[in-house]
Image 1 (spheres, rainbow, N blue to C red):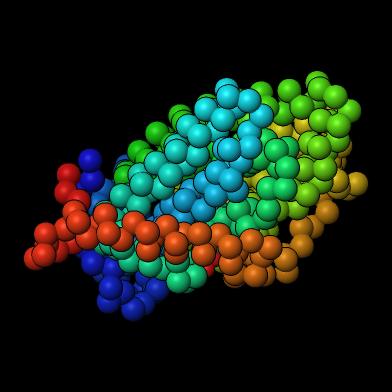
Image 2: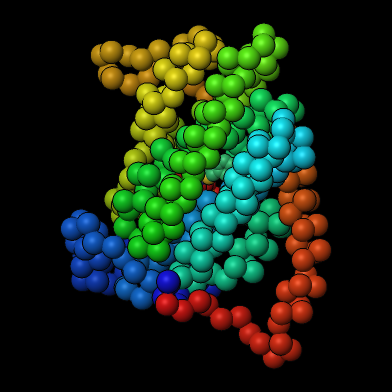
Length: 328
Ligand code: FAQ
């Protein structure tokens, strides 16, 4: 599926100024024409580095994202919900596999990526560092976190790097089932008893702030948006994605009779955008840098899983076998 990559190690500079200007211009013209860049094509080192960073973080988010819902498989209400949740969690881990494969085409090995995740070097989505206290928290993730992920991924699937776009297309197809499942779970609570409605309202109150963080820092303070938009890796800015999510899902949440815990949230008819309370970016920074409510637990679970699976990987390896980047 994917071509072999060149090695990431040794990339010392972020500067596009050091690239061959003729090659750079040809590369940018291809992107401008809407062509896909493939693993063996020439690309600036910064493009490669940014893609590895973003795809790797995305893969880690899928792996860690399986944990807050995964703990509810045994407690999901009823056999049907257990089956569906188990399939969903399995899909999320599968998405990580696709994403790690896409990142490997750029030259970083899967082992190095996993090592950077469990050592705390790599980031992953802020939102999975919050606890799922009740079943309704789990329903919030299945509906609205998946919804946010789809908004982002449907846009970026039209981006410039072939392997990432193809992985995103497949992921979006599966995520749309998750979204339907999550919406069904929430409708069930919304049309249930007063206690069921209360459970979801409380979950919404807890998860709204991290959901607003989920799309990344506001455009004013985002570090990577400009270059990623120029090279069509990101197809919308963080604020545009947040706005699109609000456009699509605020009406649906209100329709079910829930309230959103932000008294400033309102569609501004003059700008066509949503006004909202500025998210707490200090909390966001703390959480993505390892100091959220569940960061330590999430990474510890992954470390244990890694250690427990070591014998399987050892058994599969022949003594002299070396790591090989996957070939097409
Ligand atoms: N969480 O300059 P920007 C899912 C970091 S998949 C943590 O704006 P960028 C499926 C960013 O890395 C969810 N860190 O960054 C599922 C950078 O730090 P660095 C994941 C964040 O890359 C559903 C710094 O802040 N989706 O949910 C976050 O241009 C249900 C500056 O930020 C993807 O990864 C954050 N939310 O834009 C699974 C999609 N936001 O690296 C289970 C692909 C920013 O310099 C259950 N990624 N940071 O140290 C993207 O679209 C982009 O990377 C953004 C961030 C939009 C996330």
